[in-house]
Image 1 (tube, rainbow over the protein chains, first blue to last red):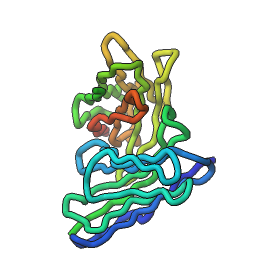
Image 2: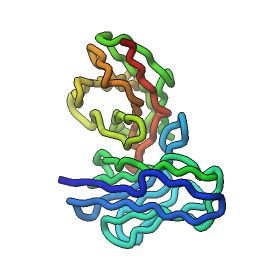
Image 3: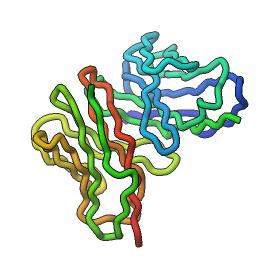
Length: 112
Length: 112
């Protein structure tokens, strides 16, 4: 069966520090991969999605970036974090665009 | 553009009572519709989905939803609430590119 892993589960970072969040999927090949941010009391905001290695689409301009160095690995990065980057970050995958998305357990990021 | 409206950021019901969570959408194409559940500090779990066919969709944990095209609605129901149903519920619709458009979520509170 397919599984998705996100780490770390929680992270506290100072303003201006770099960020790297990792997501991996097991048990499938060539998945569609997604990064979302969920701010407190709000819905999900799609940040990036990828349909294949090296193919990244950005939905919201910001100081975050994403990379897909391997088929089942999706990384969310920032060179300098802002206070507004705080939130709950969720990675998801789907077998194809018209299939339901399956979510990891999320990373709670706090910026001090 | 597609949009999703979930009526009520918080819904409170007594244990054993009917659960009704409302979702209305706008879509220029035949929609795919989804309900997800999120427990505290966890990712989202798919409850049920509508793509085509029967308009009454049954999901996990005793939940079901009915697609009503004339009302552009996809309300989530459960005949008898259980304490373990306390969570946040998200409705989503896929757009013409199969990206998910999310509602803001409804927190379900179960009173003993």
